Image 1 (cartoon, rainbow, N blue to C red):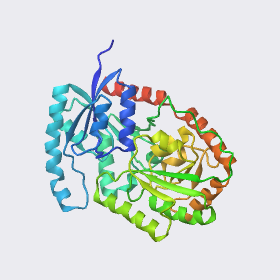
Image 2 (tube, helix red, strand yellow):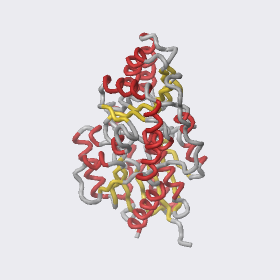
Image 3 (cartoon, one colour):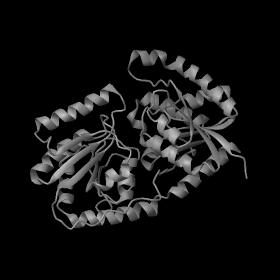
Image 4 (spheres, rainbow, N blue to C red):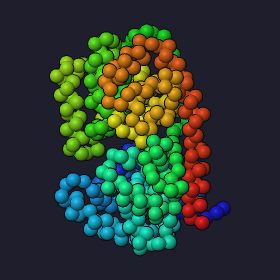
Length: 376
């Protein structure tokens, strides 16, 4: 058997995110070929999850650029120190390839200064236009110059790039091949329609739009119920955002029909317990949440904010609404709530569409081919 190559995955996530979940799942499917080692922030709550998956994981104090003076002042010194930390891991574990799980992480490029023989793969999982123009142009130029391959999580991302032929669309889908039985057809016209909003409480993820749209839709359909499920990642700004949503629900007198729940590890159950999944994010490069809803067959209403539009056919296997448009969201919620036949059609068609167009096996084999081409 061919000797396994050691591949180091660098990820900035301080909690479980779709990007981290995706690369962990893909690594699981490729562990017969490679030995994967993860490096994440030392305060990341995802460390225990990675260990449970039987991967070796290191925690180091990442520093990201922000508007805070302390982050600006300490960014470069911390990057240099972390570069030497990564260099030690590379030598100890005989790493031949670095896979950086988003383009704003400069640790992969800085490591090449000490280890020019190492190959670099850069993944772009966030829409670049979310960052200031100067920064994103610099980061993308550096990634394109030093990476063996630049992987775009969606077509929406690739459209925003001005890179050479290194950039390619690559879908990695951490979907289970075994699952609970699919949803059964609901013959009742209106019997407490459960709406699910799955996502961490982060400004821009769309929970505020969902709450306002639900408020309006509830006036027309009293059987609606809304459940938010997600974490705050331990960040004060996210806690404050969640609290602002709870205050609005109290002010609008809908607390008896709206729930604010914490992060759930059983995503499949959460999705299948719902009648409709909502995702009204302002900007999504792909959206694992949307893909999972489609895969598990729960009707999806998503905003046209980037990647989600690539995952289904409008009014066939999902419902696409205008970005940041409350009226459009309300219309979609009421329509599906009052149309059990349409919900059943969406359920059947979404499961079929995702399985025909997004293959976990094909994506993992494609990544293995990219790894092998880089290491040769």
